[in-house]
Image (cartoon, rainbow, N blue to C red; front, side, top):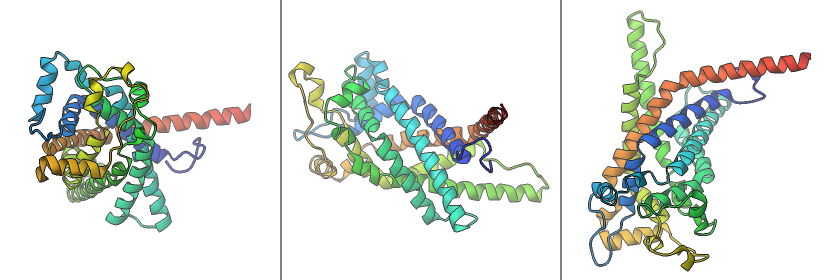
Length: 333
């Protein structure tokens, strides 16, 4: 979409990328939300000084919901999570696409290198974290609340100060390297795969445009997210522990704790708790659940994004032309 025809300076390329990514995030978050709730509660469970965990396996969380007849509570916080996922992916893909385009224009390069890609992805991730951190904190508290006792977004954030709404912000900023690694690996693998397919098509005399298949997008998404998750998992669990609802809050009556404020939680405190109570294995407790959830989520997101990007492009092109025609009519009136 060259030029600014009817766009008023809008970056339509970045907007198309952002819209596709946001829709993909919305669908993947909704489909996998029960698994995400089980995973989050499992990660937040820390062994006590007296020994033992509340949840010994990921499935224990699911069976607890079944036994308490609270299956729908596996969806507690879904609305907040969807809003957070939609906004975060929109901001991320828009920022990533925009920064990438600006870099290519300023540098005059035909393609972007790995180092530049990492920096661009990290910058887009940092912008995303600052915008969506309160929603991320609220959704984590909702998910880790006792089944059936989760509150709404406003009530959850009102339990503490606005400063506490940004619990885990430092770790979240550090974790911007996670999507940086993921999308860098994905883009590089995608580029190599597309080039290989082009060479095969050219040798066969086929001039049909080459596109990534749904299965290929899913597979590349799974591989790229696995690499990122394994490298950053200790930080991921620290963030969940910091943002988790306090167990005592579920047993307290709201009227008995007006102006209740949580004790400060830090990354150092979370790591010390894991080391003291669980040792080195504690830093990787639940990694299988994290990989399962994030790999499926990211692969599904990227697959949906690849498949709807053409539709999104056409829709935005139609909107652009409509705005252009409307502006001409107004000027001629």
